Image (cartoon, rainbow, N blue to C red; front, side, top):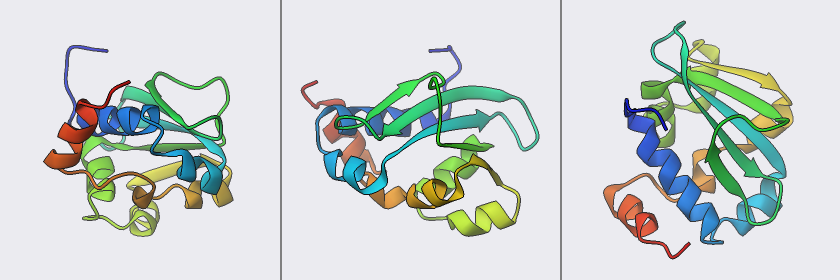
Length: 133
């Protein structure tokens, strides 16, 4: 992981630990897709983080780095990603306003919603930070 911390890093680590704990197995059954998240330093800027969220295999997986093959690729800024995940920004509005770009399967992209994971909160970050992995 790079030295510069981004706001979304903590959220991705929570998702990673949530999936590794086995709690996300229902999301895998429901979704069946592999997602790549490209996090930008600013709108129209450069990609500073790449994450894989696999909701297709096993109990799911979240890791830093690109997957071999994705079903849908989301590109957005760190702030916009957090706003979507915390419910402050509607994903459809983010897409319409150009704050979020999507490549790949639109049907699978629309299945990827914040409610697949625990609500991003200090309590859930702490809960899944302590998960026995």
